[in-house]
Image 1: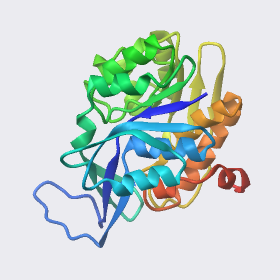
Image 2 (image 1 turned 90 degrees about the horizontal axis):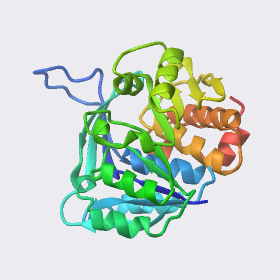
Image 3 (image 1 turned 30 degrees about the vertical axis):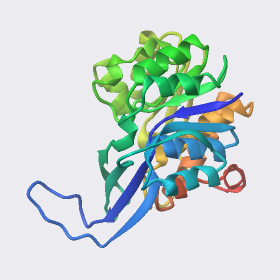
Image 4 (image 1 turned 90 degrees about the vertical axis):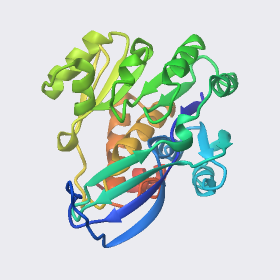
Length: 296
């Protein structure tokens, strides 16, 4: 069983700041670091480090992307479906405060240049039962989902960043929703408690499985037949940038390795805790061995 992540590849410019910039303010930073990022990049790295066989598809700029390709390949991700285009790769400007919280400004770049022809060429290499992981940082999302559904692939959607484009997608084709409480509320159309939101999502998408992350309250899983709750592993927070992406990658890779949902949730929560204790996005993601051996 293979994993295709059709997702974003970004260069992250991370600025250490005393507080997030306010309207009209000019703020000096304590320093700047450059990392490989993008939700697609991070989730591919996490799924591969978690033990899955992962292919990444997407687009980057020819002149500024080698570090992204290198990072994927070093994590064991296949990169032959990444297009090299004229122009800039996607990038993000990230403010990080002393508490490790972040504020992100995203530029799509090559991530918004996906073509239907590229989608068709990539999907031709995958079959029924293979997993497709999607976020919301590339174009052609509805087409990708429609064509993957026709092939019988299992569609995993992390609807982030949440905006009106998500509601244009055929969400009824999603097999696994990986979302936080804000994204869940936007899809449901109203705010609710975690348990109530999970119920509403399952009523709206009865054929789907839902993983709802709730910050310090942990996460919830439901599929209409069974449900689970998973707490967090408390650590000293250094950088929360890749927390959700690490959770998604390790949850899916755990299922592929044959773990049950309860074990997959625990593994994902532990991997996410390790990631937030480190700086950077992709570089913070642990290996499966680290997760299995840690004593959180």
